[in-house]
Amino acid sequence: MDRFDALQAFARVVEAGSFTKAALTLNLSKTTVTQLVQQLEARLRVKLLHRTTRQVTVTPEGAAYYERVVRLLSDLEDADGSVGSGSAATSGRLRVDVPSPFARLILMPALPDFHRRYPGIQLDMGVSDRVVDVIGDNVDCVLRGGEVSVPSLIARRVGELQLGVYAAPDYLSEAGMPTHPSDLEAEPHRIVGFMRSSSGRVAAMSIRRVQETVEVRSRHVVSADDGNAYLAAGLAGMGALWLPRYMAEPHVAQGELVRLFDGWHIDPMPMYLAYPPTRHVSARLRAFMGWVDELMAKLP
Image (cartoon, rainbow, N blue to C red; front, side, top):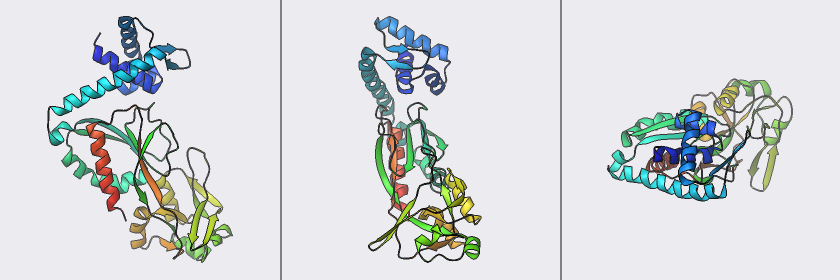
């Protein structure tokens, strides 16, 4: 038995709660992962995991052992990194999940800079606006707008997004120019709904001016749970949009969107980078966090 492989397999099973998921993230067969854990238990002469047909849970002895294993694996990774210096010490695979518009408009164009700084990091980027099982899918971190809905994650605020209300000229020609946010609640006006994947519902949006606050609940004929699709529907004239400025301003400059309701304000949307509390904050994850901080500081 390779003790390092066995320890890594055990830790991943605990984090994923499944031999199958652990095997996928380790690029091993389920049989191999099972055998490694069994060999580890035989060597220690203690049961580390409870196995049923439905789930895998850690025993009290396994939980205590897991805490020490995680620290050991973290120390080994740091030791490997300390051999080099600067960007040479920051290497390996980093799995992140980010919102689709933020990836397309902010992260992807800036990736050459990241690669120049950290050529040894392999960045595997999941692009979605949906809730991700960070631990089960073995994702190192997620970047999300709005409050993090999973309380077990460590959420680090990296900035905030300024928001506004926008509509395409074709839509305004058809429905007319709204002069007050409440106009959007009456026909012929409508919005494009942004559907939260966690609830499947289109949320209302609050907008304020001095001491007046309006919570707009407008009808919609189309909704989407992906930011790029949401924006595309608005550009096609399907309704008014609530957009971060970084998404809207290029289209405003080209005459494809018009900003509505001057003098009204929407509370900024916080951006969080979240990661599992059990996951070691590696040098490559720290590098990614710092890089995201810089990008957020440059946003409008």
